[in-house]
Image 1 (spheres, rainbow, N blue to C red):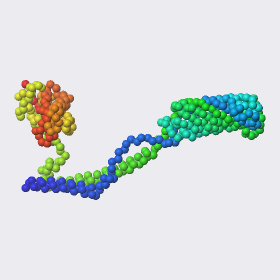
Image 2: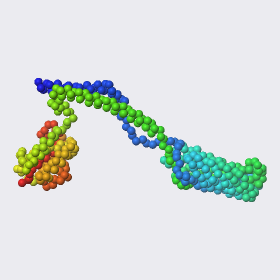
Image 3: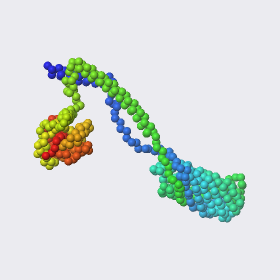
Length: 446
């Protein structure tokens, strides 16, 4: 009759818990599809195609040196054809790129030209040009530098003809084509022209434009200072990820609230069931049967409690008989161990205790052994159901060595400990109970 009542009470308690759980999910749970797991992997930065940042003021300066031919075409034209008017040209420029597209330079070019009378004269042309690179934004490398450059330019300046004592203002314009060899060195070719007033060569209207210097040159351009640009990272992927994370955090917060309400209802239902069982006097009788989280035997410290009881007073009492080895290599002693052996349980295939709380027993054993100068026998074992015989032998040795090491750390001399390894055993059920190390205390070794 009593067993029937116990069965009925346990069934009532478990059924109430299951009902509370089902009712909670029915009322408050959110569908599992709303909370699918999303992994947030590190993002690889992507760069904007046409956006770069500058470096310091001294970065991306350049110096160019070019040589070529120049031809003067003016009014009056003179009697020679175009190719009869060409003369050597030297061009030097110093400038800076403010971004991959826009730059400016101060350029000097000059040497000889043929005037209207087909006489060779010297000239010097100094001009400031604004440049725009059409291709540098087309494709960047990691430093933001393009391989090709196609650069139209336009500017103003002044030109000097010392023979005619003329220094008119000029308009300069043209096109530069560049190819980059290295980060700093480029090949440059330029087709350009300089337009000024008709009296530059000494003959013509000084108020009308009409004299032109046509030039073509090729040479090298070298970047000075730190070359390159800082690529601008596209922020939108990070914005989208941040928006998603904020939404996901809100969803998780809602789910936590649902789970908290569920736990509160479950706790309330369990408390009500316990009150009913307590009234009926059945709570203590079924408490062990409803404990489903216990995987290892619970240590009630009966061995230590018995040991402490025997130590009170004048000396130590001896009880249960158990052989003890006379030395680490011999196990045929006749001493009796004191109190009840203390077992320490280990995780599968390891020398790691199942619970850190077991270190309390190790500390108590060490304290007693030191205080009364006792000897300690340590017997390690492994479960025979898993692992080979050789592996279980090594595992039982390592478990015994682990306990011995912990006792030695707490002051028990190594000479007062005897270790033994049983290997794999199957004495107890369930199998995990066989994964233990047993510790026994003795007065002395013969």
